[in-house]
Image (cartoon, rainbow, N blue to C red; front, side, top):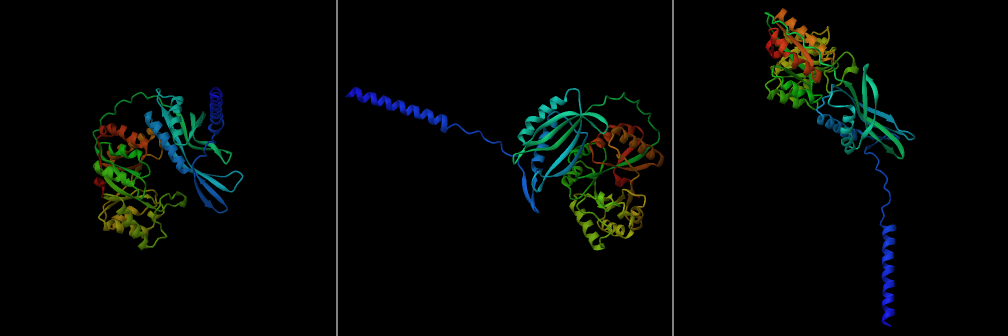
Length: 404
């Protein structure tokens, strides 16, 4: 009887083991998972919906910027835009943000190296390198790397390029030019840099220039306060870069613009608020304003507020029809005028040629006030030209030192 009992126990144990194996193989094995769809914000619009990938775009932008920083690369130019396309097969639109980035790579970094640096960072941000191919940028041969979102949406393929990097060969260094002979003539030059507030990159370059730079800061922009406070801490002069109405409405890009249609009360209120919003301002110059600076009523009202705040005014002279400086002097304000724009072109050598022209103007007339913009290439051109400017007998000063 004992032998029969043991035999039964062994059979039962084998059945338990067999059941466990079958359960493990059939019940525990995970089913293949479907890859998650890319992240987006949903917004109702009429009969359809907006799928907004702007947040994911921003994450991918940051990943690309990190890859560039890791390789010590500085973009030569960045152009940004918001994009929208209709959805396929259903009502609604897809929205995202794009950037075109121009890069010059040193010999130590190849496009392939940069692509490999971007891949893991883009993947962590929800993106990927979509492709690399030959292209051109403004007529110059380039290699293009497309980075963005490539996935599926409701089982339909989805491709959104967020960052398009155009890589051109770094220009060979030109043979050094002979040092200019020191001029016996002397004079002063005030360099005003407009449009601080749009981007962070140029702030440090101008703040650390080691020479007087007058910061003209737009109100209400993302980096306006940072630009003003960084300039003040470095000892630079800060002005309010006040947006005034241009001739073309399509050129208006600012959230608050003084227009000729406004009443005197509206103008006074907006000017006063813009002054209060910008830390440490000592004066004002106009941003755009080809229409407003030709309107005597508007300018008298604007300048009245500036005078009440004990500030000076500099006419940017964006139009030959401006009466801003004339009206300012009539009201008794300390006044100056822009005499030359430095960077209508972003080419570094052309900006340098404008600075050389400014040197000659200062040598001839004793002083000159010029305007550039908060852009990476302008930082480079001004920094590299300082020895040549000073060798020409020109002293760099703040804009308020040349007022009349």
